[in-house]
Image (tube, rainbow, N blue to C red; front, side, top):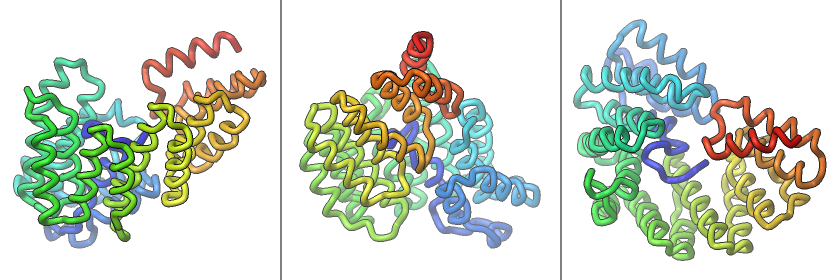
Length: 335
């Protein structure tokens, strides 16, 4: 689900391949944008093949290494392959210590690894994640995705490992000096973190991001986050309005439809939720959408369709969260 999470940003893996620089002679035939385009189109296997072909010629090509990290973290088996992603990123940094995209790839890989770790293990990774993103920003001050990754680290990590809103505010102000649009979106992130939902929405909507895909991702996730805050506060009309705006602005994203369907679902309006869940799945099938659709079919008394959707959800990768899986398994026993 899109949200600003330094550990698992929905666009983070693809956006690792977002800086258009050629860092070695062999990289001249490909740029990081090549990986970005493939990953945004969900052509993960093609992106990995592109990386493997380049790495067969040069095992330390930074563009190819970062591209493969992005592909691994974007794939269905990301959780099982995260150690591989970390090793690739470490090789990238070791061989190319001045390449910002290698450090950003390392931060993304370690962040993904920390998700599946226990709290103590995750704390052990924390400063390494922060330092990787900080180094990426220092090496390439206009590296948008690295700046947002660092921003989310500051917003989510406790002060004991270098997090905190004060540091996030400082980064937002520094970013505004070199990247005004990114800085504005960072200020919106801070407003959202302070539960100033309407202010965050207004600032995000009036920020023109143009055709920059990384900034578009940030704007989409901010709007989704604001809509989700409205929903959490049971401001259903505002949530539905803003999820609808996400659908309008980002028709290629499944999340606007999913959020709108959840808004109906939470109000007990499964007749309205079902077709919207189905539209979300039509854009891109996600385990969460199949599970929630199954819940709605069960509520509407169609146990056969409910069984099919819940079974589908349980068999998908990426899969359900631990809590959702437990709920799905319990529901399946009743169908």
